[in-house]
Image 1: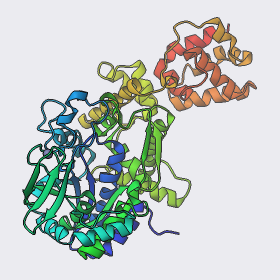
Image 2: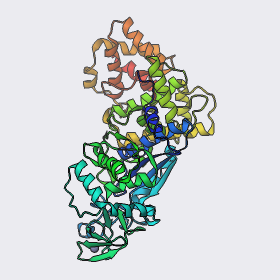
Image 3: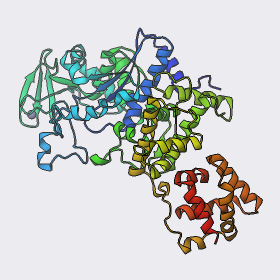
Image 4: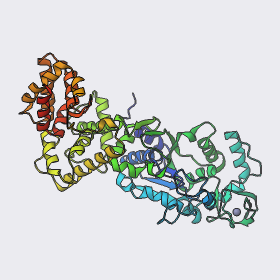
Length: 532
Ligand SMILES: [Zn+2]
């Protein structure tokens, strides 16, 4: 059996074989559109996991996020308010120089990058965010540009061999930004004399310019490898689509060994994140990125999600069904296991869950378990109580349900509880499917009564009396269960009866919780009436 509990430990051991003075873990992203959580997985989270383990092992490490803002914009993402007739002002211009689609930002790249930088610190990363354009402008790529132009024949030969491409022998691997129209998508480098590159642009302009200091970018496949050298990268992850045979990873690695004669980084492919219930791209209002995540869930849950899956396993979950609730359940269980309030099915799982929980916490886990309302319960509470106005009642309810044990809440605990409730409320409003929305039926229609198993219905007034003195969710649940068995009624039928008379639905959250959340007195009264 693999001795590594956590996938990143195994990867870190591979990376350490590179024997570097410093281990740079890197991801790369072109700010031409929104940064969705799939990008976060491959460009931030996977490198972060390895970076963190390397640091724990006591070696020098750093994490970079390279912003490829020198790449030209090749299309306008869906939903960005750019008129068809204006597209020409944007298409082909490097992201760094295209105008921002929204007011208040310096340029296109600046707007999309701000969507990441505004919130990234809340996730607990220690990222060095590096602009590719700035690196070119500062001359960090100068040597590699000259070298690549001087070795363009070898580059072309390797490329054609590995990728099965048919680049012409006179291909030059640089992309010049046209001095006349400002675009880089439509230029072609035609000659290199050791000082200057002659180029032609689709706009009709023919020019000659030094390719150094930000006038030109390496073709992206060469740029990728060159960036590994410039930033001394030891580990990198990228979307699995780059890893196909003869794809950009194969080509980049071959450039390193055969042309630049350098060691390529250790690379790991990341699978896609399928997030249903919210569009990963598309119209502006529907993009699900880091900001949107924080509206409905904690940064810790985000970390837990990615720590619990290997990068090569697909994450497929929906914000709009039970899988989101189950993710929260898993996190809450891991937390209880970490604080020895629960046990896993076996030792290895226990170790794994404890480790995943520890890693998902920003900083160091607190000595005692932090106050936590199970997400599924928070979703119920916010439907009946207003967190801002009825906080005292919520605290009372949480004590009854044993979710709160301490007598007095600290300021931080109160803040945390309010945050938890606010997230649940946002989820309920934005994504929750109908079955999570609970309303106490104001009147009990005959057709609902008719849908209930008769013996279960007759038992409801009896239960009402039994439950009067019970105030904890678990005990209520248990009492209902026992009462069903004692009276030869299938517990399933009795619970169904309870859901139906209270909410008009056939199923719901645990009945004990539901009764407390809806208000016990009201519910017991309904049980009494239902038996008639
Ligand atoms: Zn031009």
